Image 1 (cartoon, one colour):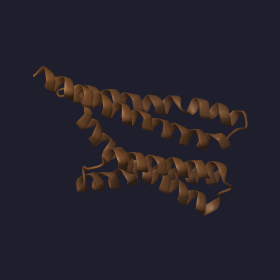
Image 2 (cartoon, helix red, strand yellow):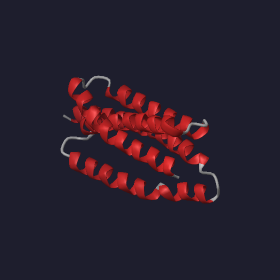
Image 3 (cartoon, rainbow, N blue to C red):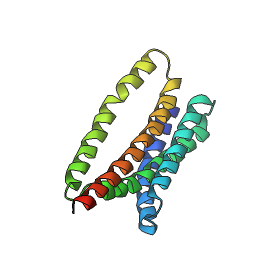
Image 4 (tube, one colour):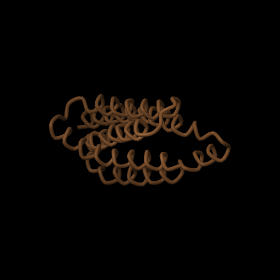
Length: 159
């Protein structure tokens, strides 16, 4: 129990540190943001998956969870910049409002299936499912870019 709590704390500290590192990264380059985001999310998901399926314990689990959080946090600032760039002109407030409402909703709903898994003695599936959800989130990345491009083309054609 103590190891799990410490690993979760390390993950959350890693996410916070990663957001700061992601801000530094975005200040250095605005090129290839989608590739950076996808790479960091895949790396984070892979680490979560490995901790879920391999017999990792002690300091190694804590360190891996920290690095996984660091990668996920590092993807957030570039994601926000890409979201800003993809939003239609004059709609940035609505877009960020939608995202800002969706993130806490997901954070409130996600523990329910995870709790059910734990209650039914399948705690080993929690990190595997979390990794799968992270990878599934990449589908939204491609969709947002396609919608933004088609909206920009329609706006340019209308003018």
